[in-house]
Length: 446
Image (spheres, rainbow, N blue to C red):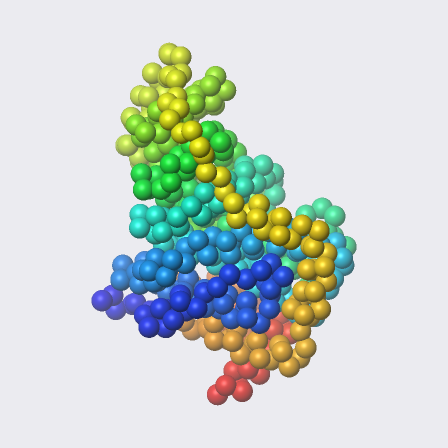
């Protein structure tokens, strides 16, 4: 066993957590029962990452498969996506100002938790297969995220203080939440690239409609070409190139500017699978627009690229042949096509109820009493135990304000890092309420 292996959950605990997972309605999102399930999923996510990193027995995936929980995770993901679109935006427009941000933040972060858990476990064929027909809903979810990413203005950043136009008059807590939302959505969209790649790799064991939906209904190959052209994971800042690497922006040396990042690699490998796989080639309906878009890939397939991903030489040869011929006819062998059902069902069930759900959640979930906050803080302190997170994350701590390397930690709650006192003072106004709760909870539990 790896000497650095860290266990967030014992297998017996994970099995109990998996078996207890249930579907919540959108109105129940943010409730105490929902919060407890979020905490279970967060711990399962931490354990899945720890297992994958240490190359240990990935029992989180096995329990989710055995308990048939992957369709539930996908429905939970889409429910949270709808909550964000319908309820969170109404919270902003209603001028609601929570006394503490964490209950709302936990719902926003729940989407990232689910996507990360799926990204970690769907690498395996058996996990993708266990999604059953819900995999179609996951494909559409990923497509929505990638479409958002491709249309995202290149100058827009995902810093926590980056708030969309029209939100400048928000109170400090809602403005902070809007900034966190921007950060989470960018990260979720990037992780959706990995999900699309894993789904593409395992098309042979998935419902027949998956390939048709990826290739023709949603035209994922053309969308991936547009992403390569827009390169939203790259930006210029203060005259330096930065790339989004390992969930953070990092300055790229001039010598490394043409080095393929993991994000770019995922896109190229997905394109290779969708365009070069014999079954996909037969199903993809290549019209003139698609052909012209795909031929734009040739400009990227230079010697530097092929040295890093030699497998793309076959794709380069295929594109050269395609440029000199008419697109071949696609094979039409699917009479009845399955369609995603989860999102449309949830929208139908909650149609006309969004304002009532918002008001209910403000009253019952997002403006809790001091007593409820104390009880929740005890669980938060356990779930987001920083000592355990330090062992799961190998890189050094970063300042919560400016992102620089941090050497100072909040002495009360032990959950926040800063690079210097000025940053700690700057963050104190927003950090104080949660710090008070966490520190009191830690003392009560000791």
